[in-house]
Length: 116
Image (cartoon, rainbow, N blue to C red):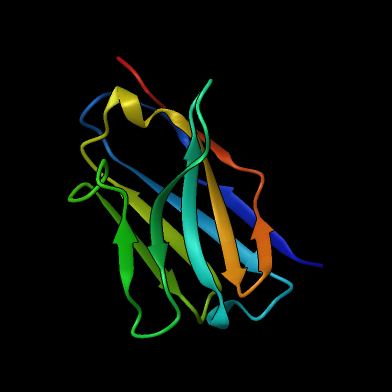
């Protein structure tokens, strides 16, 4: 049974940091590209950061470059999103995604709220 379980969300003040985690199980994690998406109220889901299988390489949305860092630990079947210098515009539900060719797995999401 495939599972992606996000954790680490919460309420943080502007300028603060959070580290999101995504625990994967039920599939061969190491061969899947992993991506964090987010969806704010009334907005479409958007890509935040991706980490590939090879090397691996990373890619970020312009809005988070220099503030967020995605990483993976294939030995633990985990992917992380370190979020620094958080802004109110980062408030959203953050989702973990695993993709390989036409196969897509999604987590249930974790809420991140940036507010004073």
